[in-house]
Amino acid sequence: MIDLRSDTVTQPTEEMRRAMAAAELGDDVYGEDPTVNRLQEMAAEMLGKEDALLVTSGTQGNQVSILTHCPPGSEVIIEEEAHIFYYEAGAASILAGVQFRTLKGERGAPEAGSVRKAIRDDNIHFPPTALICLENTHNRAGGAVISLKRMESIYELACEHDIPVHLDGARLFNASVAAGVPAGKFAACAHTVQICLSKGLAAPVGSVIAGPRDWINRARRWRKRLGGGMRQAGIIAAPGIVALQTMVERLAEDHANARFFAEGLAAIPGIELNPELVETNIIVAGLKKISADDFSMALRERGILANPFSSRQVRFVTHKDVSRADLERALKEINAILKNGGI
Image 1 (cartoon, helix red, strand yellow):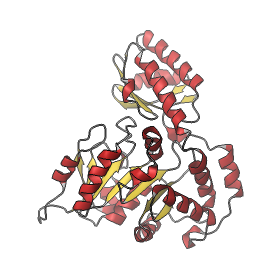
Image 2 (tube, rainbow, N blue to C red):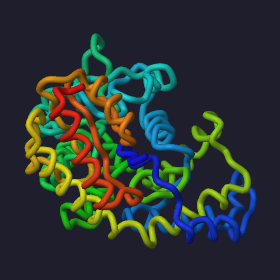
Image 3 (cartoon, one colour):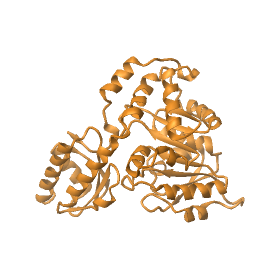
Image 4 (cartoon, rainbow, N blue to C red):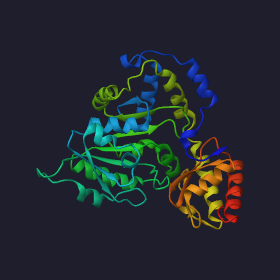
């Protein structure tokens, strides 16, 4: 099968597997796992933050961050199709007792002016604004990179109002490689940041949140409350270290493959797609004559996996385990499906 559903399906490299087997271990709840400590120090340095914390997943990292930033009954400003709002099962309302104020963005990026208008006045009828969340790259905007300039403008506004910014940087290194901007520069436009190790970086599990040291100390307690206190977690941290050391620059290959695939798709009758909008490793293709569910089923029958994105859209994601030859084969199969009238 050619699996284009997500970069979460990536398998760990042989170097990662060896690192897991050889990892020096301790009890991380006591702060005594040297491999976890090394990963956290490395991530904090790369992101330009004082400290960092290993968490089990991107969702846990985002939710721990919201819990640490926000008192119950407060409000979080967020783009209307952000992962935290769209794909995290209502966790922030259930766990943190906060509500979202959603803003329409331009390819996932809200304007600073819209954010300014959304910040609540000091009025007993309103929930106080406790946090602004950004996402880079933006999943539902097709892997769009939120520009450094846009992030800087929102961060400056947030600081003016003494409101923290949290960056969901699940694919932050994709943004960094695509834009030619160090990840730390993007992270400097947020008080706290979450990065995933298990997407394009291909580690088997885990994310990291980073921010001020006192904030991380408080986040550690929330991680514990959510059941995220792990013991000999160095076995998870070890492939994460390899991911940060060896897998960041190679993301450019995924981006090149995504553009190649997007250009091929755009040339197929029955597909609606502007390849110029494909900046990283996510492609969202529109379908003119077939539903996304039927199209995905037809693909599966031909050995290709992709996710319906809406009733008439399908999402494809490139990653290290998909080659250019795989993509060429996928294009041939897609062309054959649509030539047959979408059957």
